[in-house]
Image 1 (cartoon, one colour):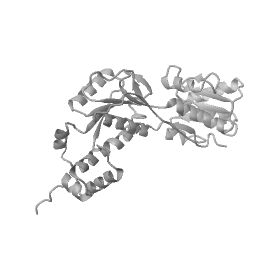
Image 2: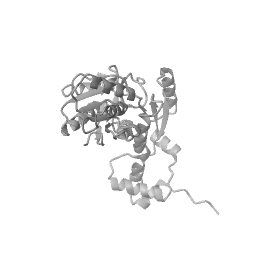
Image 3: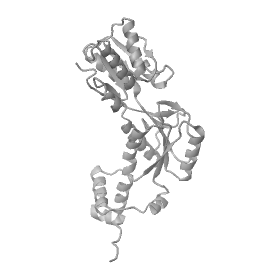
Length: 326
């Protein structure tokens, strides 16, 4: 029996009731089409098990439909959610992502950059294991680059970063809305970008912040310091979830009930920490998947010839749990 002929873009267009050009735009994520049109075309492609000829597609459009992602986040704490979000957008346009781990090694990073360029990727997303700024991954590159979670020191580059200032303010404002008026701030190392940014956002609401480490051990020690000084506080805004969990444990051991006597907030909304704490932590979520989607969208726009230079701040959101609600 002869094998059935593979479906073509013309077959998809006919089934969806659109032109071949419209079908192509819908499947490639290009043009300004109505959502219902895009959905109808993709539904038709699924019914016909349509598989585009990648070689012909790349030759015709001068694109490879691949994007590189370079990260220094070895454990994937921040880069994996970003990757998931980016793939939500890129996958819709049938664009594949090549993930490269530079491990904070400039030589390794240059190697990955050259490999990605040799593969003729359409663009590159650069991310890392901490927020802050970094030097550009390269200058005069033949493809667009978008920095995600971190930002480039070059003003003309495109960077998407979490709104840490807005996020930590949400946490403090939430505590005040629950009647907490005597707030303290416990955070990470004073030299760390995120610790400084989050502390500066609270200068009008809290006294001198306590800088230390991004660890539960520091959260426990900080609780001991606050209690030993006899400070009268009813709310603690912590710089991350590990500090917040250590803080709640130490307060409970000292006989201070959370949240009845002291409310505590974290930052990052790391579920393995926030949800396992006793009580579960109210925490700021930087929406890393959403940030990844935003970065991928900006990259696709740049590939299409519509770059958006500058720093784009992605909003955070507060997830309220039992550590702040009586």
